[in-house]
Every structure is written in structure tokens, then in C-alpha cells.
Length: 132
Image (cartoon, rainbow, N blue to C red; front, side, top):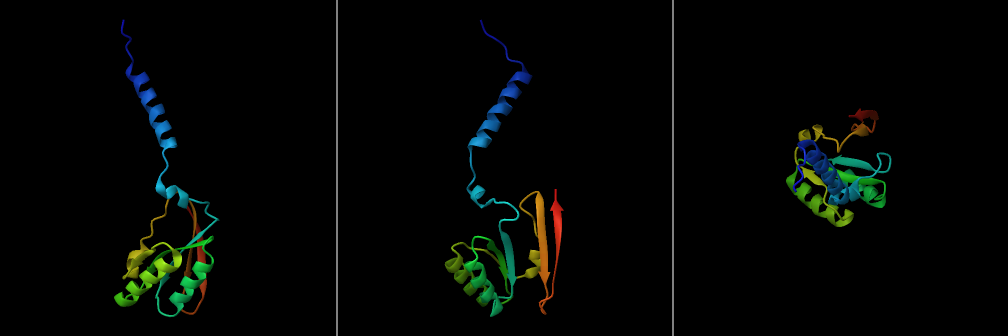
């Protein structure tokens, strides 16, 4: 005697199985997910002189900071800094030659983010935003 399974029961079982698979599978990037107050991501624009000082400071504070992007219009400076950053930090931040691309930032997901801008004179302003 065969028993028939309704479409609803089949889909319910499929959903439970898929959820179990999703919970049991870990992505490589999960080890980078930490609380919003645990680490700051930085972008450095302009790499000669002050940019190297930022690299040194970020390296000495690895637990609480991460260099996500860096940018310079000089391609030779950019490639040299890319190699130096990878050797110093142990990972390769994203290198960009045109800062306008960085103005289109996409957050990792929902939560809070603080956006801070520092001008050439050192004046800073920031805003905390909520991302849904």
C-alpha cells in the first residue's frame, strides 16, 4: 500500500531540510562577521607619506581595524602600496585608481554604520546611519 504525500507536506519537509542544510553549512566569510562595534573599516585616499602612516597605524591595531580600500591616482604608487599592504597586513585590501568609485559604498547588510569624512585640514564630521 502506498501513501500519498500532499504538496503542502512535501514543501514543509523540503523547507525544514533546506533550513537544516543552511544552518549546518558555514561560509568562508563567516569568520569576518563580527559586531558593529568590534571593528572599524577604513579607506585611505592618497598613499604617499600620510598613507603609509595610516598603514602602520592600522597594522598596529589589527584587532579593531581593517583597511578595506585604498586609492591613488598614480598607478605606480598604487601597485607599490598594494604589495606593501598585503605584506604588512596579511590580506589584500581593494585597490582603486579612481576615488569616485568609492563614493558608491554598499554595506555588508542590515545594522548601523558610521560614516566619517576628514578633510585636508584635518576637520572631521561623521554620521551614524541605520541600514535596513
